[in-house]
Length: 436
Image 1 (cartoon, helix red, strand yellow):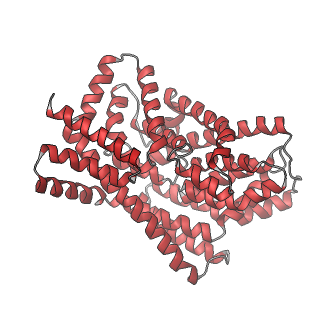
Image 2 (cartoon, rainbow, N blue to C red):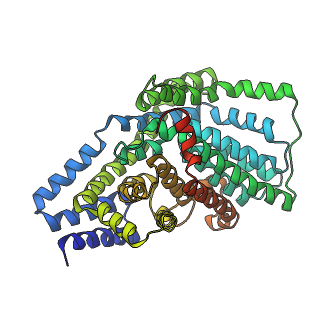
Image 3 (cartoon, rainbow, N blue to C red):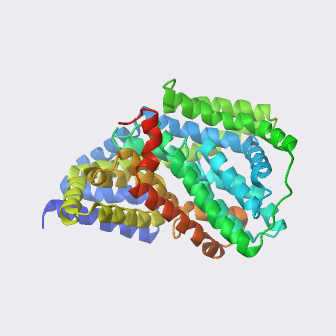
């Protein structure tokens, strides 16, 4: 048995064993990487190499966007943005059967897009709407399921931290601007698919609808939400036009979110201490995950794992449809036990060369891997969003699973569409001349 094959086996077996034992993902990645390095080189060079790769992995200007977007999301969460978006969505579609469920979906799409965080969206929208939905006859577990699934749309609709991470992991083959623009149609499709399942459920269960509001109230709610919605155009428009980079856009988002909070009179100077501390904790966790994941990604390249897997899949399976289906299946499984950030950084270098060899554009593959992992964060055993959404709704996770399954099926259908119909992901970037 060759040393390369032994290294691969040690890497994956140790990583899986550590995860199964309950070791945090970041530590599991770092320990398994170190074990493989110890097989190949002696102790001191192994430690030096691992620490160098972790340090250089996060020494990237583009990654500065992540703490800024995290901070902007916290500022908006505190500054009353969620309430204004919910009021606007309720005026817009609340009069439909099951209207509050649609309001949850639209609000999560808007807030998730503005904040760039699915967890922030699930927390802000769920804490505001769940009790109200229950008081109007919606089962609490159904409300939680809708909130959990719809909050993932903010990971596709820009600005999205995970798309920035994919741009880094792709080695420059997919730009942040192209990925941001590409995310709109898949993100909206996911939202519409969830709405369709809610419509079927609402008709079957006879869910209530709110009274139709007049144009005057609709205008008032739109006016109140307008400044929040404007952030999307400032951030994404500035990046696409070329006025500023994603990192600069994130810094502008922080300033805008702070100004908006003060304008809404729901943010004061005393709130900044807790906001900065919470943002710093989240940033530290994300950056440590990125650092260890980048070390493992380098190890993959060192061992030639991407090239090995590309040759194996391309040579053994001649049908691209079957290969893409297999990649989706693997990513869906990975998503059930691994957080999005390390999963993107670890599996992009493995599967992107395979996808590109079979004719898939890197931007399209970005949408595929992110949507796969969006489904993963909604599923046990590690689904972060599942536990956050259940906790916000104060419903046991076991009770949420049943109403969540049809919504996850709808998301899988959209996943198949964007996998086999490239124009869904590539039409907008091509229209803006961001890709060939």
